[in-house]
Image (cartoon, rainbow, N blue to C red; front, side):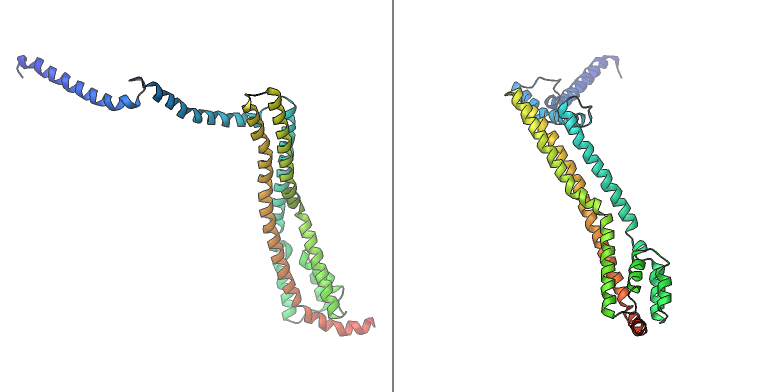
Length: 282
């Protein structure tokens, strides 16, 4: 390239790069606050728009700090007491629920080996009083206990045997439901404790707001949302307890229906025992 054309080429390059820079700066001028100062209304609107996010993040941080901070006054100690009580309730509900889920199973209520042996005795008509007593004494499951209570009335009229089976099954239902009573208590008492904590917290919140005077609405709001936490915790405990209790009751009722159907198959066996035993008793 001739040397005389070099300044022209350099000028063209400078013009090209300047145009590209201007084109790139024009879109950025509207979004980059450092390039140009926006008008005052726009800056005010931007400040108003960004304020809620900062306030919300600050609220979340304050909420966590208020829950887990070390108690510094009487109100904090009272709130901590309710949190501790609700935490203990949650531990009790968790322990009882896991224990019931593990033990309230078909193998624990109606062992498969016991059911198979009982059906075998009935089908082969070897369901004598001695064989049934040996079978009932080989296990401590609810089915075996009901069978032992029914065998105590063997030889009596069939109506008395049926009544004995019904009484034994009702007693087993009470025993099994008694083991899951902790879930029922936690489901009923948890929300009440949470509501009590909320009422106490609201009382202290309004007391602090009245002492602080006007213009201290943040104190009232802070006390209210901290007080409502106890109700939320109580409901958090109660709802799973109610659902788990309904599930366990449904399983228990299903097992009892199956047990009743199994024992009804033994009524002919008790009917055969009725005559000779009745003659001996008379």
